[in-house]
Image (cartoon, rainbow, N blue to C red; front, top):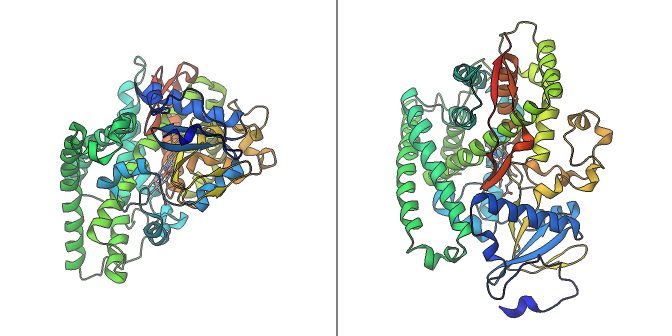
Length: 478
Ligand code: HEM
């Protein structure tokens, strides 16, 4: 345990505040705001100290990297995730987020086509429907006191991702929107609890804990919801004699093939997935999408609530794209909403829903100024990369215009880290952009939003979220 006290010329700067034996473990005990302060703190320390730093939880060493080149080197050299991701193994095991590198490579290749632009275009009608439902639900809040928009957005993102992944009957969709959503929220909170209770990082202590018992209950609940859905669809497709499964007429408006059908097809034709793999991939898609997309949209609404001139410009762009106020947005319309897209990117740059990503250092990795030791873990400092001085002197300012002038943007790709860095980046980034753009286009066309990002206090709860000062209010534009 004292090894960490030994100076080494190629060791990175050490984050202040380590105690003997426990290292920095005491720094993450407390509430989720405190946890975010720690995460933000180590990222800014790395940024201001040559792009890297080191800290410990007990004997286990973590590096934080805030240098774009080094970040890319690590994320592409070490493709496996560190041990804290294993906390979610019971739940999403071979799903893309937690899968070991070897399984990940094959599965990612198989799933990539399900997220290309052509496939996503077949979802536009469905997402318009969900966005309209969101706008009608929000009508109850128009002209009322400020409110928390999270639950409205959760229902929207959850239903868009489950509709396009599973295409459920209304009855099953209700279970997803209520019981399933609640169980996932509880499970993610439980993982965050475990991260903060460093003594529960060891499986031998965790297995006797109350958290483990709770995890078992939640897992039973989740599996009992999703497994029957998969089995039912599997037998429906079998009964259909494969005619539906191989029907690729997805270009018809309103018609799309859900991800579940694509996976069942791959399982049938290439023996690519087991039933468990399919469940884990579906759960992963939901877990990876609903909270991140919700949080990103909350930040966007708060930013735009403050910068009313930005909101007016979005409104004018929406009017230009659509003469007829109430029509659905088509895939062509979405391409024309360049200013709205710039606003989304700029808000995600300053308020990234996923503020760091993890890697297991499974071999020694030589970086510019130091060597990362095999057996340690690494956090690629997304939050810091997104406000790196290479963004310019105005890196801390909200300036969507920077995205409209590509020449003014920094050259290094890994500075655009909101959807991850390197090969193992977000498979759902185009999908999520579409889901956000459509919802925001529908909302801003109907309502004027007021809020104030400068009052917001954040917390880290697997994703970065606004904790306080995040209420918004709506007035009607008509
Ligand atoms: C604003 C919304 C989103 C943000 C900010 C976001 C961000 C990220 C980031 C940073 C990663 C890399 C994580 C890591 O390396 O540990 C990631 C991975 C992933 N995301 Fe997203 N994501 C979003 C929405 C979505 C959506 C809508 C989906 C699915 C439809 C999705 C599915 C995934 C999956 C499956 C992975 C694992 C990819 C892999 O390892 O191959 N995400 N996301």
